[in-house]
Image 1 (tube, rainbow, N blue to C red):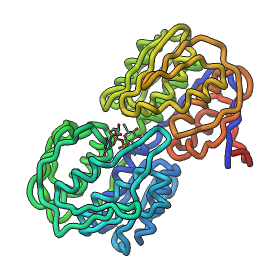
Image 2: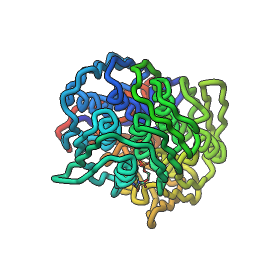
Image 3: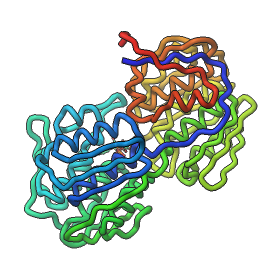
Image 4: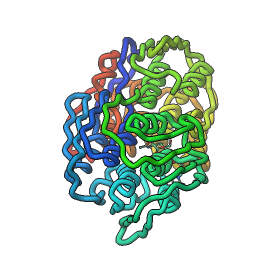
Length: 420
Ligand code: UD1
């Protein structure tokens, strides 16, 4: 088990290259199940969640290799249609194999994901959408058993905007007979990245980037190469880190269009941002203004940057509110932030923050991926030494975070520990 030791008080400065998006890669990789063949994905982040999905494919007989950031997958031979609990419990996004397996092979057995650190996370929309396409689904012994004699085009409306459900149902619809119309589809850039990949593979999809996707099923696809889009949540984390430490940081390899809500809120708090092409320069010299945020589906403020924003607002003298509309109980970072001196109360789905109080280093524990990022950012501005335990959560989704932070001047070291 690893932990981080952080000495606070350093202003982040310099340049950092943003890695490929975890959630885009996790949406795209299961598409190799739709068409046997050889795939190459450039700019794949070398992180634990990618190792998990490739291990899951490995359990189905599919060979893959990740060299630095190049992912090679040969999906020609598949000998199992099952996603076992041991993989799904490590990463919920494993459920993304369900749609492709049913569509291509007419059967799938996928462990039902349970709840997670930030509350219940149902998969009812994934299942209802696939059933509407003609999959027969039952739940037995904690597994989703699905089979079909052939999917047929349909109309399906997502009751709530769901990234994963849109990805699963869209992936299945591309091989269904006839046309499918999906309404209230999620708009997240990772969904769009999947849709574009599917089109590259030969799928017929209209309305990409909108909430209505029209799909005309095809009989077969082809295997392709693709680039994974930049990780907007990693980018948001560095932007917030620069703002918190009153730093000056250049982010390279980003897509600023994916970050408009975060950029607008940072500007409102007093940061100077300069956007040119795929680069964002951020500078902050003063104490920030308190700024409220409410998370929302894209293009709203992302729930995956909510924990980092709470940490940021701890450094803004005055009161601010952070409301999470996507995951109302996603506030496990707050009790740990209290250990660093934060004054934050949580009422229902809102954190009420009294910022501007001095923070002091402490030992804190990560509870999930983005909560870990929030604790690290807070430790960067706390006086003295902090220890962040259970950084395996962080390793799921941030590529070489400590190296990138060290290059920006932070004092952060990874050490092995028996502490749990
Ligand atoms: C994805 C992201 C995650 C992000 C989340 C919201 C991946 C791998 N993960 O998760 O990082 O925090 O989007 O942007 O891409 N819901 C239902 N029924 C369903 C599915 C979802 O009610 O069948 C609800 C959820 O409880 C939640 C909302 O819909 O309130 C959005 O969740 P969803 O977009 O599905 O999240 P994920 O795809 O799991």
